[in-house]
Length: 217
Image (tube, rainbow, N blue to C red; front, side, top):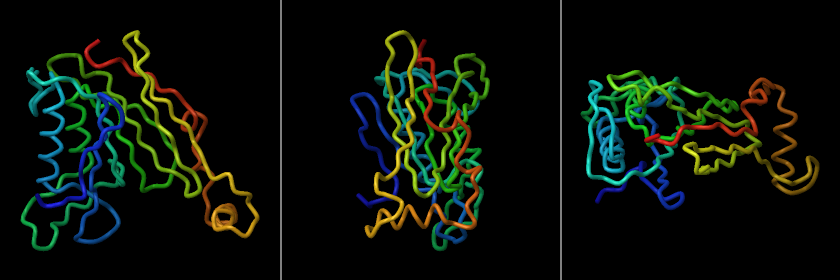
């Protein structure tokens, strides 16, 4: 099997991470997904969903067991707009809005975690209304990180028909001034003349607990 830059991995029993490769090798910094990867993403979600909606909004039911999915990519939906065809690859490209619509068809998708903009943002996006109203509440975690910070994301089943996505910012414990690489890294970030403090986000973008309805409830 040919290796690819997109794959799945287990986060916890019943929770699977989907890593996407949003780089467009035709060049430039913005991204997109090739059609083969887009179809793989759709098939992966179908295999882990007992119910989902097809491209024209019809409810589909399967014999598959339900898996929760957290999707990861470098680019955000808004920065996946580079649709140039890759050299030597004859396949169309899919923009971020197209990928977002695809994810919105699957109630088991809990979050889309991304970066690229280096900005702390957490946004809830409603699923596009289809013929059945079950898709109305779809939460997407879209986030980028200031260079000196990272984020821990935890999925918690509250056993009451809801799920919590615990989101906590973390950074290195090294002092801002010191001889180690971690200290130098933090000092350079702190003294960046072009730093935009707005990228740190507001309170709702930092340590928060977005609450989702458990798919199927």
